[in-house]
Length: 336
Image 1 (tube, rainbow, N blue to C red):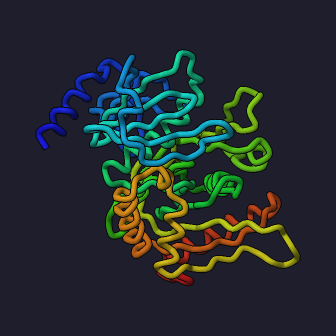
Image 2 (cartoon, one colour):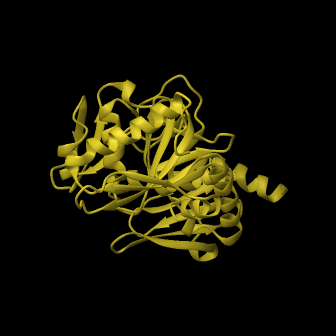
C-alpha cells in the first residue's frame, strides 16, 4: 500500500500545473490541450488534470489487460502498471492515468492529429478515468426529458445521436453523447457530459433545427452540433429513469414505435454489451463492472425500442418518448 501511495504521489508531481479549466461531467478539468467542445470554467478547483509529458515507461514493461479497434487500422490497448493504468492508441499516443483517475499524462507522438486526440480524451480516456472511481460508462447518448434521464444505447449507425438531437430540438436537454456516465445510487444518476452531438451530414440536415449550430471542416462526413441556448444543455446530474436499446427496422406498412421491457438478467447483459470500455478491462475489473450494471438494471427499466429507420418518422419517435415519460412523471407509470 505504501509503495502504491508513493507511486501515486510521484505520478501527480509530474503533471503540469498551469492550464485552462473546463466544465466536464459535473466537475472541472484542467488541461493543457485545448478542448473546443467544452465550456471554459473559472473559479472552481479542478477535479481532473491533463498534461503533456515527454517520456514514460515502455508499454512492454506493463501488463496488457485488453485491446479493441478504434477505427480502421487503429487499435487501443489498456495496460496496468504500478499505481497507474495506460491507454495506448496507435495514432494519438499513450495516456497514463493515476490509480484514482484524477491525473492524466499524455505522451504524444511527433505529429498528433488534435481532432483525434480530443476525441480519444473525451471518449475512452475519460471513460477509464470514470471507471477507476466507480462511475459506470455506457456507449450511447442521453437526454433530460422533463427531469428524467433517458439514455439511448446501441452500436454505431443505429441512430443514438440523431434521437438525442431530435429530443433536444423538441425541448429536452442534452446530457451526453457517445459516453453516458452513470453514478451509483437508488436511483442511479446520469452525469452531464460534452455539450455537443456528433451527427452524420444527412442527420444534421434533418434534426437539430431550433437554435443549433454546426462545426465541421467541410471534409468530414460528421459534424458537431451544439445549441446556442445554454438551457438546452443539462448542467447537473439527473435521475436515470430509462435505458433504451435502439432496434431500428426498415419501415414496412403500419409498424410503428414499440418498446418492450427486458427482465433483470437480460437487461444486465444487454447493458454489458453497451459499455464504453468493457472489452478493455481485465477479468477482475469486468466482474466489478458487471455488479454495477446489475445494480443499475435493478433500479432503471431497460427497454428494447423498435424504431423505424426513416427521418420522416422522427416526430413519431419523439412523440412516443415524450408521452411515455410525461405520463410517468404524472404517476401513470404505464409499461414500466
